[in-house]
Image (cartoon, rainbow, N blue to C red):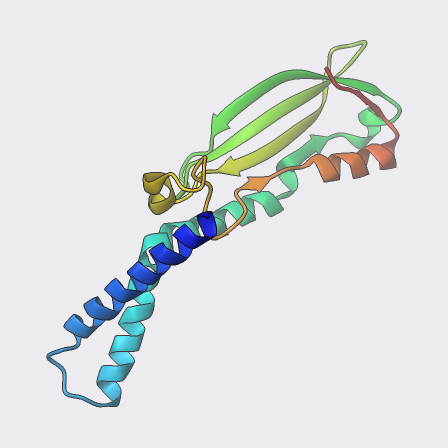
Length: 167
């Protein structure tokens, strides 16, 4: 059902873009130049509602590729037993889309010293997905809005042979 609604929305938007580009180039003489401008404007108008989604996706993917998702000292982490400590949720500043950072501090069971900091990110979509509220939770329409470090945590855990107690 949601796919049918999406196709309907895209069809209506495509029709509006065709009419709008036709109006914009109606004063131009027929020919290659008019066709080029109509095609160019059509692409710009068609992508305009998700332009912030597209640009925000570049920022979000760069944040997810950073090496700062797991922060630890290999020497201190080997053969340790960790338990989750303080958890924080913060908004990332100066981004096109609203990005939330979820920080989990993993502490040594005995000393309560923070030995590992894990960061995960999620993002809401651009103005179009937030205004229509579709799909639920307003995720981005052009990319996956979640970036988790759990896989990398498992790899580091196997490499350094430490235990994690989830509570």
